[in-house]
Image (tube, rainbow, N blue to C red; front, side, top):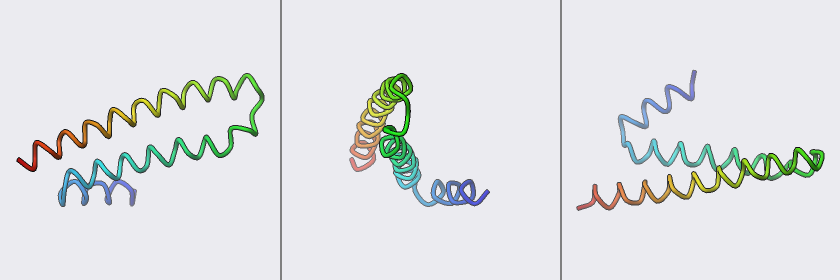
Length: 75
């Protein structure tokens, strides 16, 4: 509930701020898996590793898009 309220406030203050918040949350989620992957069996490690690689790719694209949006906004 509080996260939704914070997101709503951030989006009203600045869409850029909201996007940074989303990016940060996703990045932290990936790192949470990285920190615990060694606790999994080898098959699960492989599966989670593949998912994390996709997540990292998505974050790179997301960050690139945020930077592009910022450049457009700053013009």
